[in-house]
Image 1: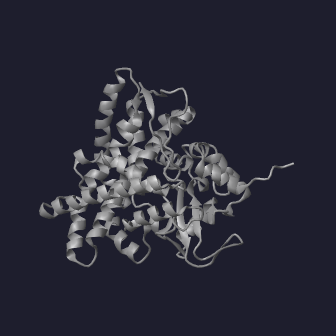
Image 2: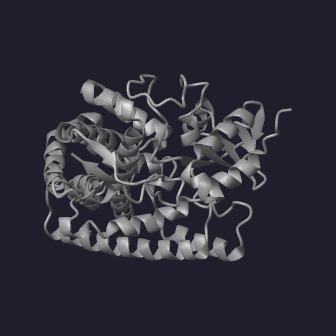
Length: 413
């Protein structure tokens, strides 16, 4: 007799247990098989199939609702009050709909087009090689190297810091601040999490307000100075919008790529045959980066609100409903991918859903891909041996929406 699968039990495991956060993929498989379109008892809808997730993220009848999380059933009054206080401090591009979203995104999108990003590749190679020189010296002592601390964070924060104009000495502080604010994207919200996020947001706003004033006095050849020139034109960008965009670009510019590098190298270490295959054919690197993104996506969940009643696979999602798209599940959907639980660096079945879709498709997707490609290429060129310097799996952060490692100690040779 086939056991009956309880989708809500799978969701509780997925979102609220250490086991689900550590390995969401068996829970995704259960949802894909038993309830790919599911209305949770907590009064939100959950989608796990690739096509359904694409549909919701692209359809204008769905969009962002700043109060979406606060309207979720099951949150007590103190958490609701703390969340609304946090939301009042944000005017993030992530939470806007047209026409404001269209206007603001247009102001920054040219800096992140594939063609523009490709011109940065030689410089990203130089930055990576300089970091790998230090890692080589560390590896020569025989000690393991924590790839998260030595490469996965320093490289992308340097790239986006240079683009935006954040001084080198100021960048490291943002890792802790950004992680405090991104914890608000998780399902398990507490007053403590929200209060810490609010304090971190204030610190970042004050920092960029001061940096904006400094760039007004002394403009430089960076994106922040370009945005200030737009704001000073008077009708495109307010000061608060300028600061919000600067925070978002800087935070998103390193957080996702840090997790791509960590998750990706970890996946290759777990699949030595595929690592050897990639080493023997580095022409596969662009495909391999997309497979790393698919296999263990840095972003696992995205949310929308329904602006009107919409039918999905025979189910009517009512206006006002919260909808979660499980990007990590969509990346393992057997109706879209061939043998989705097989890791294949030569897979060529189109892009994964790791950067979302529709008008909120990740602005920095091209930059993250180039950085991932450069890192793989240079690591393979520099080190003939990669070995995980741990008996068990590398420690993960206790988050699901943004999935990444705390540390990745590797013995290089």
